[in-house]
Length: 250
Image 1 (cartoon, one colour):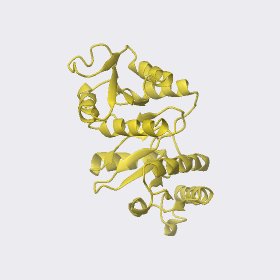
Image 2: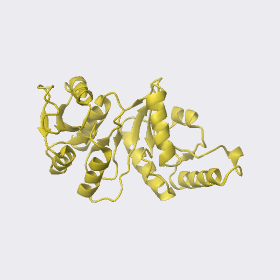
Image 3: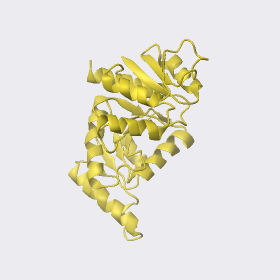
Image 4: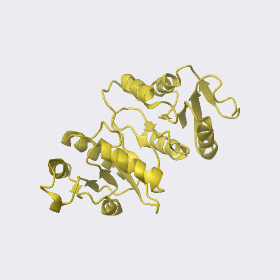
């Protein structure tokens, strides 16, 4: 399997990823001319617009999967949407707590998961990914409070009503705001909205000593794993992308 990874900045992170994951998967770095010259053993493809080169090779099948790495989010994701013919991207992050509990979290983009319909799509796709990776297929839908908090604020009431409906229609479980209990039993956690999902992701990975293994885009027909540029490296994302590619094309 060939995994392409973007190197838009901080090339040491990408080089470290190649070093750590390279024995298990072939990795090709996409960068501007000269950006990776300090790493002569790294396989690279240079372009003035490396995000365009990465997406073009992914769509053409010249690589089996892609990882954003340190490429800029706006340009890369805009290019991916255009190439795949979609107006939005749905991402589900594979996270790991400090004590080794793994689960899928969505939404993780601030513009994702705001409606019941969007939550239902994430429930369905998250459950399928969880099953393929040996996680529990139970899905927890979170809301902005506990049942006893009803009436304290309209936004809380709305989030609880949406969670109840999404859980009912999606054969999932409304676990209120109790994420600490949900991850012990459920392989998929659906946050109340994209902002809270992004905050959960960032708090766990950057403050809570947990780990983020990348966020696959689940509403396109190619394997693309999104990443945070704040990550120390992208080994987990590269291996996740390779694993998904192998499952898709064994």
